[in-house]
Image (tube, rainbow, N blue to C red):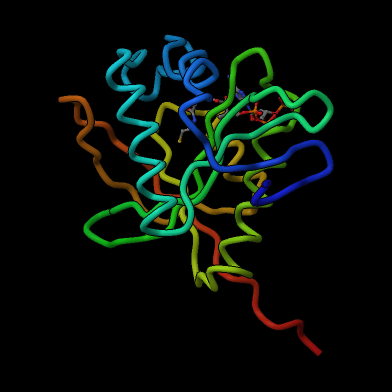
Length: 176
Ligand SMILES: CC(C)(COP(=O)(O)OP(=O)(O)OC[C@H]1O[C@@H](n2cnc3c(N)ncnc32)[C@H](O)[C@@H]1OP(=O)(O)O)[C@@H](O)C(=O)NCCC(=O)NCCS
């Protein structure tokens, strides 16, 4: 059962059967540059488990993104709780298989996730935390209408990573 659908994509909860598609993304060194390199098998398993736990406790998480035309899993996109500069916030996250970059899929999937956050979760603001070296991710955030709000440092895999917090606020009522 999809959680969200767009013109070309379908987003649904991941299952253990998605491990091969997850490995293809999370173990590709180029895809994972901003995460300080490819994940080990055990880290991919932990990544999946974390999202299964999120579905159960939060009702949402990073979802599998399928091409509606073929059913192929080409990426992950969704909403998660994150801590940014000491504050618990909702974030839109996106990671796609490199074979499918530059086709507008990340923007298309993430835009649907933002609608979900505002309309279903009634969020007031949604963030995207972007490592300051991650141009592609920053471009997607900008395409989503997000603006840079603050800078902060994230500690991940033993590395200090300067980040930019992009955000978009809940659309207000129509003027006039
Ligand atoms: C970020 C990511 C999800 C973008 O996916 P995508 O489907 O290619 O994104 P879109 O096609 O919707 O938009 C991409 C736009 O971002 C920019 N962009 C994409 N890749 C880029 C790159 N390597 N360098 C510079 N700009 C880039 C371009 O403006 C591009 O538009 P274009 O294809 O018309 O030139 C993908 O590159 C990815 O999975 N990266 C690795 C994981 C990651 O870092 N995720 C973000 C963590 S915060």
